[in-house]
Amino acid sequence: MTKNENDYSLFRGITRVLIFFISCFVFFQSIFSSYQLIQKKSKVYQEEQRLRQVEATRDALKHDIAYAQTDVFIEQEARNKLGLMKIGEHVVYIHNEQPSAIGDVEREELSNQRNISPITQWIMIFFGR
Image (tube, rainbow, N blue to C red):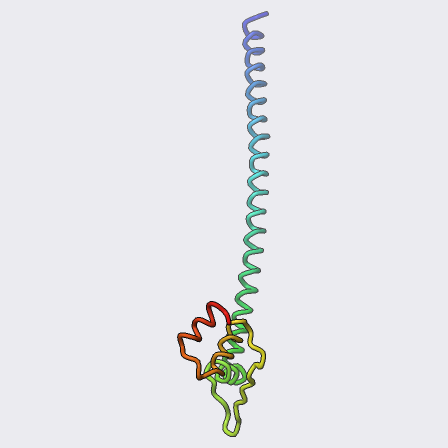
């Protein structure tokens, strides 16, 4: 082999190695870019879902605000929370005839027996009859 042929084969070997490394770099870079693209699409999808939830919450709050500005809502709140009534209306309270707890039964019995001293009432509550 002549020197030119030897230099040419060395050049071809180096070129092949360089082409191999460049092609490996491009291949792995494209895989990495694809992976990043998939991650970004996933993030965009998650944020779109979150945006839809926030928009639904916003719409519900707008509906609640619009309802709170109506006369029906204001009247209900005035009746329920403030105890107000319209002119000519009468409030009727219905007493629950059955006490809700055992303590209420004992208290009701004791209040009916007004002639018993308070100390005796306490003893009856704590120690029975």
